[in-house]
Length: 461
Image (tube, rainbow, N blue to C red):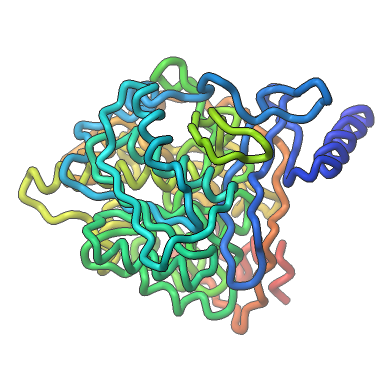
């Protein structure tokens, strides 16, 4: 153990000396992952939860984060794994990110041609003026756009670039997407919770669309706007595929989640959440960079460009957005309205999948040291939510029937990183401590006056 500690300390020191953020050893294969640089951070500014997998070292021992060929799960593997019954035709997925990616159209074309995908129906909008380029956010844009297209290859993709990573600009970009034809709006960004966050909630209370948000990559307590009750919050897992077949799936240690300090519990969580405030995530998706996704990006990052292998809950928000777009395609074909967040309609439809084969209940792994709130377990949990998508999820969201949960297709063999990242955003203390309800149903956490996640943050008496 002493030797391992020394090795990990040396790795951390090397990362610091190279000016790389968040590098840590990966328990999965002895490699390393690096947090993508966030650029300017601080109050009122959002981060994007994104990590890179190191592919090797150069002659000077510096980490290489690109390769000439793609590494990670391919679109065909993911399509086989999901088994969707549509391709997103007729639906528009909006991607909201900060700053500009000047090469995104050509990079998307390269991604599509490499994997045999049809050319994308792609539009880039800059309603706040053409932003400057930020290499870290450009990599996030590449992931979001390319993998929304991979899962729903016939959907229209609308990239809305905010002028900066301020909440004001990003929320205005959501407004633009909602009024320009999007049926689902993907957001892979956020920050720690803060006093006054509820004033932004209505931006995703939409009568024509629904927002997806990544839950964060720092484990418990997770971040806002994923705690917004009007959004579908996506946590993270370590998903192991053999071809397109699942061999195992466990909670990823970085999966953002927990109980909100400020947001009241929405009605769709009454049966699964014994606390008085909003819990998240709602669902999960593969986020471990070691079981990650190839992304093509020609904006130079850390002196490198080409094929990156990426992970983080950033990967789940656009792919769940694509799943919802396919479900909307099926709904329209069946004469039904698309899913929206008005009156919690979309979230209620997602929670109606609990206990069916459309979602896999992830039951092992943790995202921190705060008792049951930081442990995945049977039923809904605050690490992976209701679980991860499986075949039939689009049909179920379209209103079709799916069978109840059968024998799990995945074993819960622990895997992925064992080190839980330390949250980088420290939210302001709450003005009032919400009181937990005493209406817990079977399988939900035992109510306490203070959720363990809050105790971790020194927020309870």
